Length: 309
Image 1 (cartoon, rainbow, N blue to C red):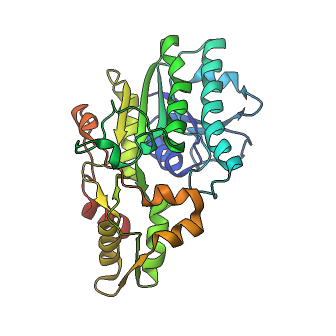
Image 2 (cartoon, rainbow, N blue to C red):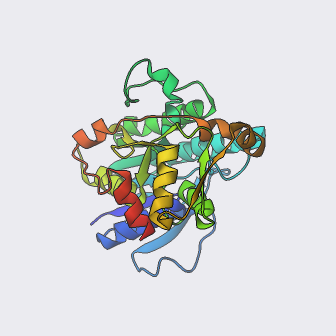
Image 3 (cartoon, helix red, strand yellow):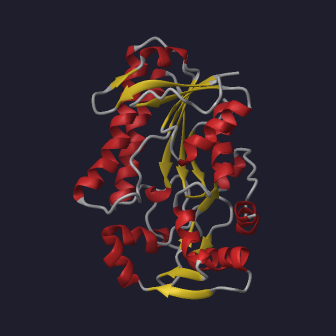
C-alpha cells in the first residue's frame, strides 16, 4: 500500500477521503498548520506541519510520500465576497500549489502522482456553450472571478509535470454531503417544510455525491495511465428547482410548500456571490466515464435516497 500526503485533509472531501484511503490500507499524512494530538483514531493517519504564508513544509513528509492529494483552499462560499476575501480565495490556492512545487523540486522524494482539486467555476455560465450540450475539459477558462481563479490554480500546480510527476486535475462540481457544503443549505429550509427554489430555478447544477468524488480521487491515484483534467461531476445534472423539489419529496413526502427566493433578494443577501448561485453550468462527465470511472450515484434520486435515508 501507499503513503498519501493530503493538503486540506480536514475539509469536507478530505475527511471522507482519508477514511476511504485508510479503509483500503493506505497510510495518510495530513498537512496542517497546527499539529493535533488526536487523529482519526487510526494508527495509519498522522499529521505534519506546513505554513503556506511562510512557505514552509515538513521535508520528511515530502520524502515519505508516494502520492500527494492537493485539496487546500479557502472556502468559496464561507464568507461574503469582499475584495479581501476574493484575494484570500485566490492566494490560498496558488500559494499552496507553489509550496508543493517548491518542496518537490528542492527535496529528494519518491512522489509519483499529484492529484489536485479544481472546480467547475472554470467554465462560467451556460451562455458560453454556443450550442453545445455541456462544457468539456477542453473549454477555455471563463474570464470571471472563478474562471480566473481556477485558471491560476491549475497553472500553479502544473510545474510538477516538469519534475516527472503524473498530474491529475479534478474540476469538481457541487458536492452533495450531509457533513457540510451546499447540500446542508438546501436541506435547512426543507426541515421547516419549505422547498426554497433560488431565482427562477432553471439554472443547471452539475453535482457529485461525496462517495463518488472521494472514489474518483482514489481512482486517480491507483490508475497510472490517468493524467490531465477531468470533470468531477455526475452524469446527470439537474436544475435547481428539480434538486429542491426532489429533496423536499425525499425528506417530507407531500408535506412541503415550494417557494421562490427572488433573485434580487439573493443579490442583497449574498452580493457578488449571488451570480454563482443563480448561474447555470452544465458540465459533461463523458471523459471521466471514458477513463473507466463508474459512478455509484449517476442520477439524483439514488444520491438523495442515500443521503436522506
